[in-house]
Length: 389
Image (cartoon, rainbow, N blue to C red; front, side):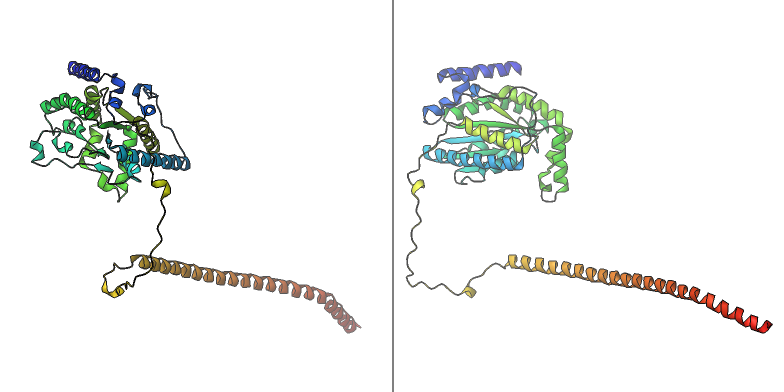
């Protein structure tokens, strides 16, 4: 297999030679026309090649601000794609729960669905399984002025199909031979191809699976294949390593995205995508001078009565009413408890005050009794003396 990869590399270098370019910039040489300053040379980028890379923490505020800035750049890039007729293909591959879907959502959030679309194909049908393997993906490739994001792609054959036994060893080997040739054809035809591998550690992946299991809104993300990926971690690792040997070519290189931190992964991937594409800001002769027209005066149109049309029920009003009623019941319960508490407090205070009064009265009465005792004793002594006399 290694000899085969060397042959593939020699083939790709030969292709670059035929394009009269270095392997590192073969992709940019086949891009649509652009300004000279937009030339891209991958080897000139400060790519991370050290295994000691680590997770970078970023605050929510700073993350949101930078993400919004990058999304603004994506909108400008979209305008370039539409204006110049460029064709862009972005492949998202990687471990399950590595953050591919979340990154795709952030990329497409402010883009036009008529320009940027996501392709996430289901399991091949019985008919598709008899076709040339790449055939069902070809129909989803972009036309001029389009961006296609593949959420999983033809690399399923080198990954899940190989590990789970859905493809034979011969089919996998055939894929390894044909894939570089197929991608070379795409690039030669002018398609801008970008391939990203989202890498997540086994501990973080397991935690994300657990969070999906505990969240009823995301349990659907836990497929049988996801569960299998836990017990077949090393099998997937070996499959990925072999895939990289054969398909990480100079004209269609793989770029790895550290995704233990989803925020870090999104910012890094989007930033690299924007830096790698030869786009430039396109002047819009109409965009800077858009003026809303004045609404014309009424011309006699009469709107039909509301009762004629069927309107959906006002669920919002029901929610507001139910929330107000719940709040009222909570306040009533709180008020009852407060009243009961006040009554108990007043009763306790009254009892305490009464107890002090009784104690004070007893003390006072006891004092008066002591004052009378000497007087009574003196009178009794006087009577006794008179009796003796």
